[in-house]
Amino acid sequence: MCEGQFAKIDEEECRRFRAAAELAGRKWNAAILLAGARGARRFSEYRMLVSGISDRLLAARLKELEFEGLIARDVKPTTPVSITYALTPSGRQLITLLHPLVNWSLARTDDASVT
Figure 1 (cartoon, rainbow, N blue to C red):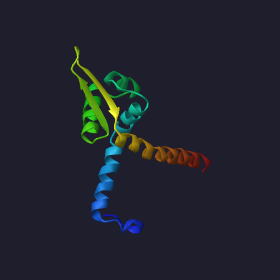
Figure 2: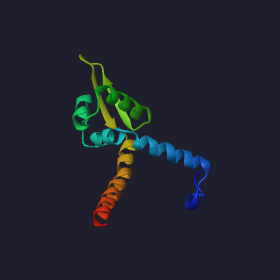
Figure 3: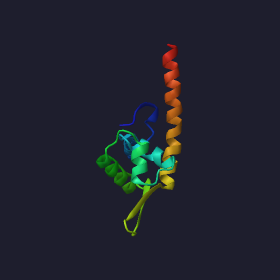
Figure 4: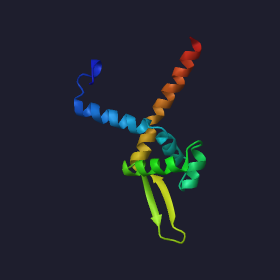
């Protein structure tokens, strides 16, 4: 699958790259991670910072990101139950890795407006 300048990358690395890119690029995931990086801890805070996402989809994405080890969920057995979310070190690392993509996108937009 990997061709050209990436021909030296083996198929296992190609599969890992594809899986990682799809996880990061899945609709809403980056926005949810960014909300966590900006301080969201409770479900309502995520909902407020990720405009346009439904409660059902936000719950599903939080569960997926928790399964992937990017978000940690903490349940405190109080009345009512208190649930908070926080980025894991892996989640913070992914946000850091995505930042150059934002810079690339800005540069690309600037290039497009010049031509």
